[in-house]
Length: 304
View 1 (cartoon, rainbow, N blue to C red):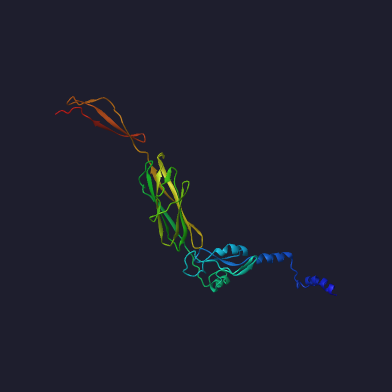
View 2: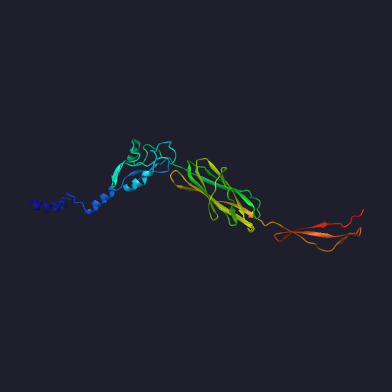
């Protein structure tokens, strides 16, 4: 009788629409895989959205997120100073006691990693960049220096983080080592070829930073117009990248004038005195074009 009941149990389960559920091996594996995960609140760099939900492996959480130290976020806390919120759990290898599992931490964790009653503001970030040089409206000769000034400003709402300025020098111009300053403080760029990158840091709203540096024209630079291009970028509180428009600054290179002297013709006789006067015209040339002939008269003897 007992054997008959055991035989008919699966049939009764099918007949009654699954009153008896016989789990498959896949269902068991899925449950085991799920038990190896843990829900945590991972700290961000955003004051308005300080946490995001994360679902890491338990073993990985112990070895990774446990190092994200700092207290539970609160209004007024310093930037980048709060830590993750992690509940206690058991895992294959031991027991983890949790991190920031305080009453405040549990309130945030139970609220889907959103700080309760927190109003999340929007941010209308605006990053701006200008660039000038001290030779605008004039020119340089080969081997001369040019001083560039770049001003990056935050004209929007909220701090812009990790601001960088990238400047691409034109061919035949080189950065003068040790010349760069940001707000008067030495700040050397990272140089890759002719690309210069300055790390400005965080820029609060309505604040700006002024970058000044010197570039030198090569001694064999050809004449012409030389333009370099700069751009700035950073991140807003939502970790969205904000970039400025590309800005340009041009400089004209001219080749120096060439002065040459030559003697033309024979001595000239003054019609009044009959005195013989040598004449040596001085020939001035620049870019191969004659500008002027200046006659310098030298008298051998002066009469009364």
